[in-house]
Image (cartoon, rainbow, N blue to C red; front, side):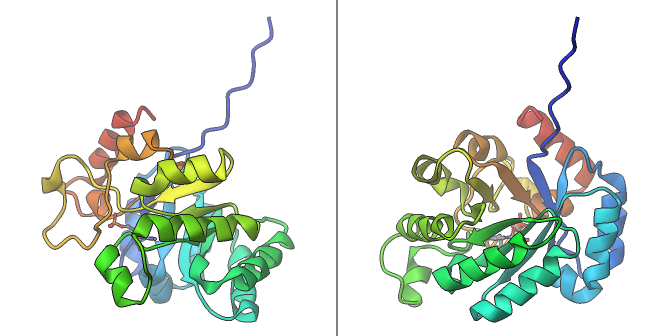
Length: 242
Ligand code: C5P
């Protein structure tokens, strides 16, 4: 009797390592299993610890999402994406509002790399509500802007977008099953797990986000600032059936 090979594990949770220096990030990474979650290195940690930290996490077997949200002229973004791809990261991102030319330049830059990372685009930050968009001259509700920017990113050949889980269902229908939807703004049903003064506005629970069509959940403070981060991660994994 032949036994079919086990499907490769594709961890859904990306733990945002939003720390001010390398050591706490490495400490928590040492307690995480790279087969069960991925990690995200964002602007704070990258600026403080440098590219070496990303390479260390890659060497430890983690799928690393390099969340630097590049937004500049096409030539500059393409060069930055090329440099980031050389770190061996699993995923990286740019701002869709940088325009079609910038998105295509970024995609072409990473396509030439031997270890091509997934390249996704930020649509509308999950910290922005309708009134915030009006302040910067964007008409309409966030959902309409997200859909417009997701279509732009898909047309430019990107692998997916960062969006709020509240927009995931619409984007899944509009962009098809292969387009990656990465959703921050994840909050646990138990709100006491979050410190006061939360800046995320368009939020959803882990299970609801996956049911709405999200592929990957970016979760930071609900895990990293909880009393027991590893127990919290395990609780979320049980909740989503991972
Ligand atoms: O702590 P919290 O769960 O809110 O962390 C969310 C993470 O996702 C942060 O690292 C933030 O920079 C990132 N992110 C976001 N909104 C986006 C893109 C990334 O909150 N649109």
